[in-house]
Amino acid sequence: MFAAGFTTVLITKPETKKLREVCVNSFSETYEHLNTPENFRKYVETNFSIHRLEEELENENSFTYLLYYRGEIAGYLKLNTGDAQTENISGRCLEIERIYVLKKFQGRKAGQLLLKKSIAKGRALKKEFIWLGVWEKNKKAIEFYEKNNFIKFDTHIFTLGEDNQVDFLYKYIL
Image (cartoon, rainbow, N blue to C red; front, side):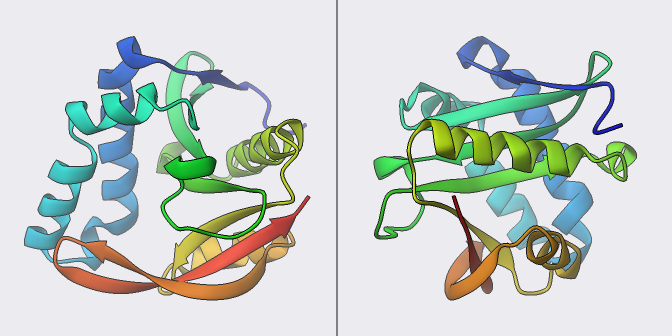
C-alpha cells in the first residue's frame, strides 16, 4: 500500500513551533554529522528561527505541509513559486525548497507521498516543471530524485554557515 497511515496538512503561523521542531530534527539527522558544529549551528539558528519560519509561512507564494504518520509528525515539505523561490529559474516552475522525512519514518514511501504532493501542486498551479537543489554529497537523495525521473540541469552554491557547498539542480517536467 502506498504510504499507508501518512497524511499531509497545509500549515499556517499557529503551527510554527511544530514546524521548527521538525525542521531542526530532520536537518540535524541528515546533515549535522557532515558539517562543522559552528557552520551547522549558524545555519540552523538563521534559517529555522521562529521569526524566519513565520515570515515564510506568511508568504503567499510558499506552501508548507506537515507530514503526519498516525497523528505523529513525520516530516515536512516546503514549496515555493514566484519570488519566494531561492533561485531565479526561468520558466513557469515550482521549487521544492525542503522535503524531509524523519529517519524513523523512512522506508515507508513517505518521500514518495511528498513528491506526489509536489507534482500535484505544480500541476494545479499550471507549472511547466518542478525544480530543487540537492547537495552533491547527498547520494541517497540524488538516487531518489533520479529514480523518480528528475533530470540534472545545473548547479548552484548553497551556503551552510560559512561553508559554500555545491548543490546539483534537478527538474521534473510536468
